Length: 258
Image 1 (spheres, rainbow, N blue to C red):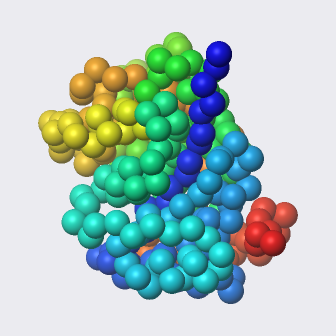
Image 2 (image 1 turned 120 degrees about the vertical axis):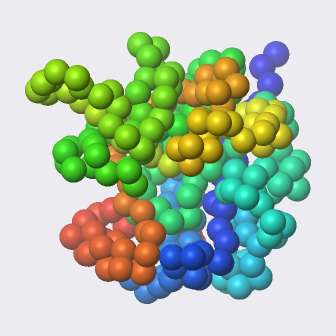
């Protein structure tokens, strides 16, 4: 008899940010950014439930104000992954359930990317973790350290993530494709707890990329390809770019839940 598997999405959100304090509450096209992200998560049909995991009462009140689910977590967490692990434990997520980490600063992501990411884990119970990549179209992004690159094996598992161009083409290689890593993650609950208990890895420390901890410890990460890139909000100036995107692509807007 098959065991029912639930899929929960958590959006980690903290108020303090060195570059953009209060970022989750920034107003974009008339709504707080966290609401844009939450509503897009609700549009993912595979998800059993969506929660915001926060350490700030202002964010919790905002989420509950628009009818969303919010959980308070400790303020001392080093990463969003640690925060969602605490939140997932609080609601009793079972070992084989899937936990999706959706970054709160991606208010215009396409819900289809979550579907693409979770499919490999739904099809193969041995895969502990998944993420996403998209083809880089702008050559400047290849050398931009703020855009993380990823290379995979022939089965679609990550070989390495880096802020440097990978693969490095020693000889001229016209047409070589590079892939950007998109910051969405899916974990099996039992692996999420194992992952957050692991010590920081050497490569993780050097590159400042948390996902390298899994590779350094010998775990597979499935990397699904998406045709969609994802625009992030890092600094206040990025809000205008998001509003311009919504203005240029009104069909991308997600309706508020009824």
